Image (cartoon, rainbow, N blue to C red; front, side, top):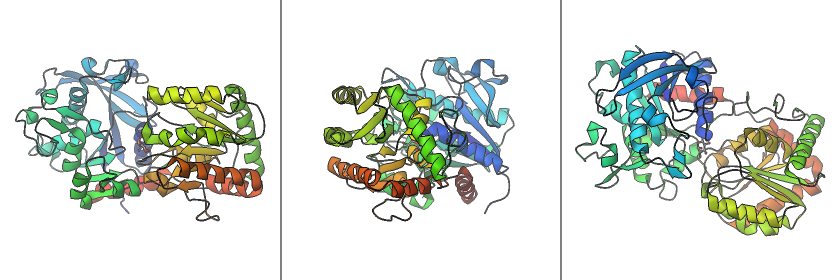
Amino acid sequence: MATKSLSILFVASEVEGLIKSGGLADVAKALPEALLNLDQDVRISIPAYRNVTNVDKAPVLLETQLDTWPHTEYKVLELSVSGVPVYAIDCPQYFERDEMYAENNQAYADNGERFAFFSAACLDMLAKLSFKPDVVHANDWHTGLVPYLLKTRYRNDAFFSATKSILTIHNAVFKGVFSYEELHCLREFHSRFVPEAAISSTHVTMLKAGVMSADKINAVSPSYAEELKTELGGHGMHKEFKAREKDLIGILNGCDYSSWNPKTDEFLPKTYSSDSESMAIGKQAAKRVLQEELGLPARKVAMYGMVCRLTNQKGIHYLLPILDKFLAHDVQLVIVGTGDPILASQLKELSAIHADKFVFVEAYSNRLAHLVEAGSDFFLMPSEFEPCGLNQIYSMAYGSLPIVRGVGGLKDSVRDYYSDRELATGFVFYEPKPLDLLLTLLNSLLLYTQSPDEMARVQAHAMKQDFCWKNAAREYLDLYFSA
Ligand code: GLC
């Protein structure tokens, strides 16, 4: 195992504690924190969007300009999250907006330019700040140009002669596809011939640029790393992933137990541990509050929860066709999420029909997410694909048994009750079919109604699983050294 201390710049488009829209932010907070705890010199860089916590009070570290850019001036603001220094790139014409990526489901028209600028500025600031990282760690398409620029613009720059790049794939369905015109701000794209990034004679993707340029690549679970190399699971980029297979591994995300721990969770009416009595009391109290808040009958009944972005990735289209049949049983269901307006209206309609059993909350609420994890008996993640998934890991920690489709990180983190009762931590189905989901839901209900003691045993076992970030961070360190 690696012990020497490295200096690392972690570049991401969002970081929990500062600004968040999804799981990427959780990782971008927890992984640097875990690396810091392993005595590494790690610093984060994000765009200084208007809504970043405390951005208006942040001291200015650097006022400078990007020489090769039409809009050249930018500042580097100093923030920190869990003790990790954060460099926020402040460039009002790109980041002084209400949202990070899109408004009213409409991506900002200049997203290509915005994230190309961010990627370029992250590298430009380093010599000016006298921070010479051994590793620059980029994440997803937004920062895919960071490894690319290191390999091109900075190829012969002595400052970066020993700097290696890593790209983590959190979700390859988002590729950052832009035309050469849209990226005219990068002189490297003026030739209109960038084979590392091109997907046609007119368009490039920033993710591909990163995949083809990074020294090492990882996906956020071993199974997703395998799936990316297949035509079915590669989101149209399986050839590129296959070409880089020697440098591509999977590292399962950890769980930030400082935020997701029923023993200390301030959102819960009563905290609890995996001890059977404590768990029963704590979960019962959370279920009551949940039922009251949602206007569901306050009674002892199997509660199913789901918290997610409303997209087909999350498998809502497997759930919708069987919801009537499932809700014919004695169950309660709560779904919390925002996203696709069509899925939202379908869920609204079904919750109106089954108002005494099913509530759909069209919102993004961290507090409610915690309450659902604690107050539900089962947690639904029937995803079509899932790079890692974090909610199934949170739900295990809260003794809510995950019901997942066996793909990506779901497959790597949940053990199915019907395959291995002793070690089970949830339920897994494989076929991407509504009926397979229904069958699994009914099997879980059977466990709840017929064998409460066995159910409690499996819940306690799930709660004892440990997906700590420390182990994942060690794997990342090994990856850095292998680069
Ligand atoms: C993306 C993926 C999710 C993963 C998260 C963090 O949101 O969809 O599966 O857990 O990134 O890596």
